[in-house]
Length: 308
Image (cartoon, rainbow, N blue to C red):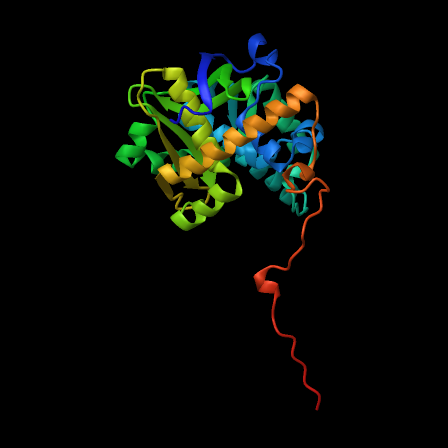
């Protein structure tokens, strides 16, 4: 890691959801950096975070793969197939045809009973659980992937202060998985396309280079033993055959990510110190905020017409 921007750091483990974590106001995470990249105004006053089903499913799979003991404590798997079959059979005996058995009163009563059994656990149906099991089996059939995903530390929270040329900045991060002895930090991603071309597009679109550089550098500072950190993505498709790929972040990938997160940390520090949170204009090269609008190359074409 280059030392020009970051002079020193005091980083410590901190459990997400703890009082210390909750009280760490002004500490910026990788998601915050990406919001700053959109604009400081989006970070400060943008729409509140909304959990999508994709995020919920991804977190569930993370827990299933990386924290199996926690999964058993926090998730409840229910199988509604027998209940549905019984509802359909009863309807047929009464000369009725049910298109949506899950919309019936009987099913809702059955589901309410399952919710009571689940108590405060998160409910997932057996079909989704079977899919996750098949995905994990595919993943663990690869010896190196299995090595990466076992005997490590999942969901490690890191909190602390980084002394930079711009001043002291509070940072926080949660790593998917760490292999401390090997100095490997890993992120497990579900993807629609885990091929090299497909995941490269996702990496650029979702700023994964910022993730890799920020986490690699912060974990190197946390370990503080002079050894570099290797950052690895495991991307797995959500549909059969649940194919996956292993990707090591290259020096080019890390270098661009480091350049961007350092610039964004500087911008964040300025905004925080001056309580100024500009919009897109902070990325405009002139003080008027006036940008030149050009057509993209694909839109420049001849316009031919024919009169007969």
